[in-house]
Amino acid sequence: MPDRPRSSLQRRLFGWLLLPLLVALPLLGIALYQQVQHSAQSWLDEGLEDTALTLAGQIDLRGSEPRIDISATMDRALRFDRQDDVFYLVLGPGGDVLQGDAGLAEVQPRPAPQLAGESHYGDVRLRGRELRLVQLGHDCGAAGVCQILVAETLHKRDALQREIGGLVALNGAGLAVLLALAGWWAIRQGLTPLTGLSAELERRDLHRLTPLTAGLPRELVPLQAAFNRLFERLGRAAEAQREFLADAAHQLRTPLTSLQTEIELAMLEPHDRRVDPLLERLRLRVVRSARLAQQLLSLARAEDRSVDVGQRIDLRDIATESGQDWAHRSLPSGVDLGFELAGAPALGHAFLLRELLENLIHNAVTYAGPGARITVRSGTDGEGPWLEVEDNGPGIPVAERPAAMQRFRRGSSAAGAGSGLGLAIAADIAARHGGRLELLDAQSGSGLRARLSLPPPPPDPAPAA
Image (tube, rainbow, N blue to C red; front, side):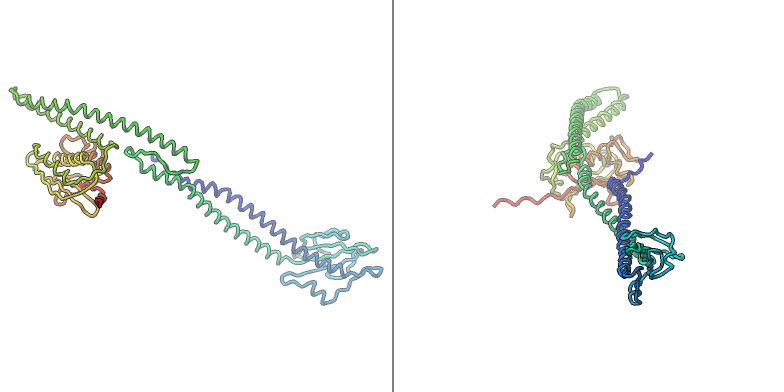
């Protein structure tokens, strides 16, 4: 069952950061809205009370009964408001109307009379209209306490409430966006060391197990140390495996070579010719086993990190030496091995590159079939030095080529008794040199072209004056 895709750490952290933000900001917005609205309401209520105090200042207490005389001009001034209707009523100590709108006494709910110097605010209704009312108690001398009522409609209060709500919501949304962006940026910056560590780990393999040395935050230092200890253990295990592989291949190669020699001598001595097929099969099995041992030894050498691959060489010289070696071997019937060589200066290790070319030629000879034409070429182009082996055999299907360069894997149409190590060893040696091995179509007709591409070497240092 395939693993379910996991959410990213960055998104998880952002989600946990966003959760309290989404909870806290609305609560803070509501609290801010209530505080601002209360302040605005208090300010408007104070305006009503100021009007009531103005009316209180107009009460004449010089007679036996309090009285008030409001001019038309002052009445217009007291009622002036651009948005709301303003009402007022002055009641004597006995509840009689001294001045103003008598109908204001019918508001519901009717507030209780106030003591002198005290005031009361409240929302009331008058004939279906919502009003805000302040009732002020005023000392009217021996007569008692006069009641002054001032009320107004709620138009500007409602408009101010909507404006405050809109501003709080707009600023809250803007603050939420800014905090979210700041949190996202902070999380990305905080996870940058992890991204760098991941990229550094991606570059590690069994051939490169050097310790991680990047400067990391204190929280990631234990993780870095754990990886370095793991690299150290893997390095020891890989080294032990390479040593075992090299020792086993070396120990096997000598007796197998001796056994092959003994079989070939036995075939030359007088014997019953009926055992010739058996001796030939034995010889072929021993040759294959010796070849496998040689390949295992080459594999161990290709993985040896102590080998210096920075020596100045020429791929043409590597191919020339291999050509001289193959000139002394017996090729299958009809196989034509040719060379088209040009200078190809490079950096590398001559022995490993000869092993690479040996495997490519051996593969071509083994799988191209009788009558095959095999051509070894070398040269340099704009990307750097290259070396290739081309044959006109059946080739390898494009879809199978990546798998053919894996260890102990062979193409589906491969004939012969190969072990599936040749191309894998060549690919390992190419990677060891910082290059690449490609399996391409032959330049003309059917066949396979195995091409090694290496990085261009640095220019030769100028001689000292």
